Amino acid sequence: MSKTPTFVILGSSTAGAFAAVTLRKEGFAGRVILIGEEKEIPYARPPLSKQYLQRERERERLHLWPNEFYSERKIELRLGARARRVIPREKEIEMENGERLRFDHLLIATGMAPRRLALPGSDLPNIFYLRTLEDSDRIAEACQPGSRAVIIGGGFIGMEVAASLRQKQVDVAVIHRDKVALERAIGIEAGRILTEYHRQEGVNFYPEAEASEIEGNGRAERLHLRSGHSVECDNVIVGIGATPRIETLEGSGIETNNGILVDEFCRTNIEGISAAGDVAHFRHPRIHGRIHVEHWDNARLHGIAAANNMLGRHIPYSPVPFFWSDQFDVNIQYAGFPLEWSKSVHRGSTEEQSFSAFMLGGNKLVAGVCFNRWKDRRVCEKLLSQDATVDPAKLRDEEFDLEGFL
Amino acid sequence: MAKISDLSAHPMKKVRVSGRDIALVHVGEQYYAFDNTCTHKGGPLAKGELSGETVTCPWHGGMFDVRTGDLLHPPPVERLRTYPVRITGEDIEIEFTD
Ligand SMILES: Cc1cc2nc3c(=O)[nH]c(=O)nc-3n(C[C@H](O)[C@H](O)[C@H](O)COP(=O)(O)OP(=O)(O)OC[C@H]3O[C@@H](n4cnc5c(N)ncnc54)[C@H](O)[C@@H]3O)c2cc1C
Image 1 (cartoon, rainbow over the protein chains, first blue to last red):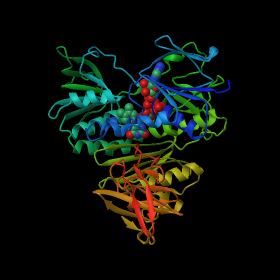
Image 2: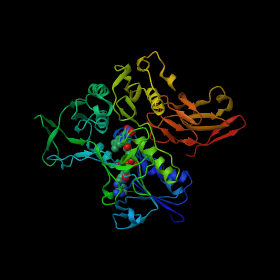
Image 3: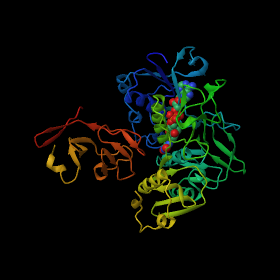
Image 4: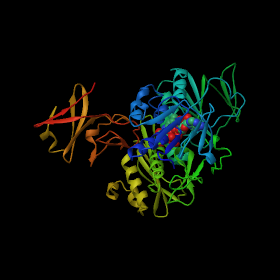
């Protein structure tokens, strides 16, 4: 390593920005360069489908830190700049404009991009995806009160956009493949209850449905389903998952498998190159094999962990995965591992929108989904981090205070 | 603004200053001031839990560092605004920069 080493971070969002700030906080004295193709300074995406889409939050509030915070810490922001290729052999990144940047250590935090529809009519102009601030602006602009929006996909993005647009008096229909929305993320029971809340708020659902064609005269006006049904619309929003952004790594020798493979110290197979956040599949000390977490707090904590490990701290990253969602008045919090579970027990009342579902494997908690009950989530985090055994009867029994586990 | 004795019984208190709700806390030898309103959904932080230098929102469990406003646990993703505090005799004074 040269005397004042240069650490380059590719991807200027949550994982990348927290890594850069952590390097400085931990006293790194070399150069820190944060590269991102988006022009905006680093910001948090979660409000893009929620308060920001509802036009209830100013743009500046999404910024992780104000602009001067970076200059004060000598973090060099290179925004609006896309990398074309990573060349490990030469410890260089080639930028789209041909410039080459040398690094002593590289952190790749390029995140994910929305999966695109591939149907007849997919290229019509009023079909939207949601990942960036501009995407959210475009959707808010297009979906005026009284207009009709069709949402393809019953995952988090689809359901949050449905709730936000509905609250703006947009007519909303959600088309999804599974029996109930969010089935894969939070289980069929929790998904069913959430769908019911949406229905009460006036969202229409087309379950077990698949779009076959989007039709219209110069713009999307009608969505055809494989079942033969069709749905009229003014706009289409697509939320059918995301794919990791590893296009700059082709031919680099960095191991990928639908994401960048890293160990518990955020290292790739190539010395001096790490990865963190949505784009990384990491070895978790608690789990056989690697896991992949596409949620905000993981990006934050993984970025922090990567920075510490780039400084040689050698601290394994072993989080209890956590995410949340806000839809209408329901705040969902989930803590746990994407593992097999053999039974689930419930606590609380679904009518009062206050309940938790705990997933167990044997006498151990695997995950908990908590609706308007963040304290149950805190208990899950504790039990999971200690790998503790639990008595399912206690989890179910409202008379038993779960805080006793803390 | 507030008196030191206001924080003797309970180390966290909401005060209203120039039309703003500010939370004042007493940790060890130090006093800190920050927006009382959680950046997630507006939960009243002074009604939450204080543990060391960490405040936890009573509504959805968001956590912040009271010294810096740094986020420690979502659902909030935005940092909390903090204000410098000055102690003059028995008085706790909060400085606004705008
Ligand atoms: C609308 C929306 C709502 C969400 N809501 C929640 C929520 O409620 N709760 C939750 O837990 N999670 C939520 N998430 C997920 C969370 O936002 C992500 O997990 C998080 O953004 C991942 O951060 P990251 O830094 O790993 O990647 P990203 O945020 O994807 O950032 C990667 C950055 O790298 C840049 N980049 C990629 N390739 C290049 C290149 N070649 N050159 C230069 N720059 C490049 C990209 O432009 C991007 O800015 C939401 C996501 C979205 C989109």
